[in-house]
Image 1 (tube, rainbow, N blue to C red):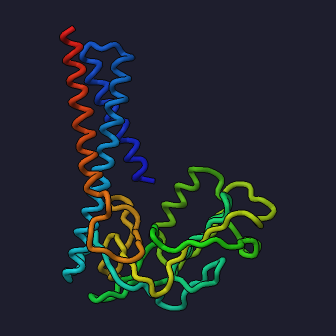
Image 2 (cartoon, rainbow, N blue to C red; image 1 turned 90 degrees about the horizontal axis):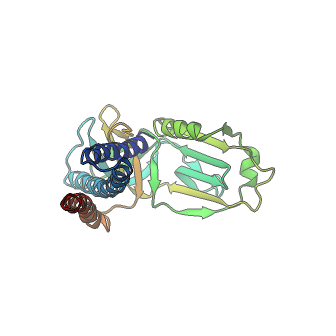
Image 3 (cartoon, one colour; image 1 turned 180 degrees about the vertical axis):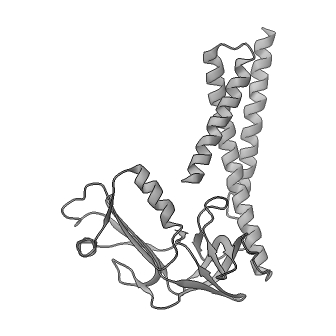
Length: 272
């Protein structure tokens, strides 16, 4: 939620800055606003691409430090790679019944469930716990019949976008074990035939986790203020993701083109 606010605030700040500058070039108000909106949007897109590339490079550096055997520093961003296992009993996925340490289940647009067991990543450099619910990517998802699960589950109702944003932020701040079941708006009488997707992190899967290192528990936590939510990705890699450098170059080009183009246009107008 905080990151979305920052992204929106960035565009607004760019727009106001360009509008102020263009207004003082004796452009009419309409022209200043239009030019500011166009330039701000191009620069905004370029900066977002560059920030995404920067995040990918930060992830790579964190993986490199871990693979060299460097101990994570308390309170700093870190990556941990290894096999994830439950500390006690594993969870059972709601649709398939498979053993896992975490799951997410989406039933149409009305029901969504999350769960996380106490678990840790076992690596060649020690065992690191997960101290909050992670955002997950790259894990297997499969459809299933959710009617029995929905009938047997008590769901907490969320009434609007504000509730969803607030509770999502709270979800990624809560320590395990946890299980959360939400119902979004009015629910249908039956979910038979409604698409239900279950995504699980299986016990024993090879994973890479990114988050803020918390020395007191030798674990990783979310850092919504600086680094974002705790992230868990399937597998491990020692390379930048495809497209990271292209994003960096494209973002830089957009920023340069937007500003050079604006200067050229204003120069041509001044010579008329």
